[in-house]
Image (spheres, one colour):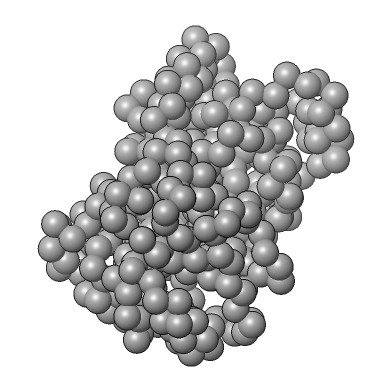
Length: 362
């Protein structure tokens, strides 16, 4: 079988979809039988995947997303006479001759109350996601929650959709090297006691309520709040609140290799998002032995596991604040969350994701 993956999203600076493309592609390469061929299309400057004789990387020349997606990619994909190709980032270009599989990560574009994306991006993606789901031979949904959204919002036949959960990379683990942890603490000037949030600062991430909740208990707990990730859009109020509070530290983009140490150092990982298609940071934090406080919305309970997090109503600042106090001051609860997190994360391995994805491709 001649299989394709359209991996243009590899060139993005960070984000869950980039992780998904990279991890899934590498895991598919590991299980690829010798009599199958895999063609990976991406616009990195050089070849990036483990070389096997039956793995072929085809570099896109254009750095323009639209030109690459709709002009260059269809030509190159069709030239290679594929049997099937996976589009791992919501959109299938037109004029693709092979069987088409698309991964849908979330449908926040169809939910204006969350203000998730810019207007132009929303208009474009609302059209393209619906069109892609209609034209796809099969759809992969990263969660049961997203599958429900695809069925209810886009009116897609459930039989066309397969749920394949994401995984967590093996680099996310307990770090016993104290010197390594101390070096990261010094690098980012971190205190001994901090709550951690990794993700963007935008309306659906609910950071404004998190900051307000944190400020109401920061003196009682002697905690800092550390935020890392891209500062996206419509976050002027949040950034103003952050500037006025020396106990809140925004690290911005950090190298991926530093993330495991931050999860290890944090006293609590908190994910107060109003809507997520999956929620990969929850698994990363669980694998590092960090207790989780999570929103009870959308896919997050599905990802965190029944007992793998202390769930809160993301609309309630009071509930978020009480949960922080509760976990920080209750060693028994903290220990229970860590153990349940370890148990939960065992079910989310990229090798399993690759096997299930290969089955859908076949």
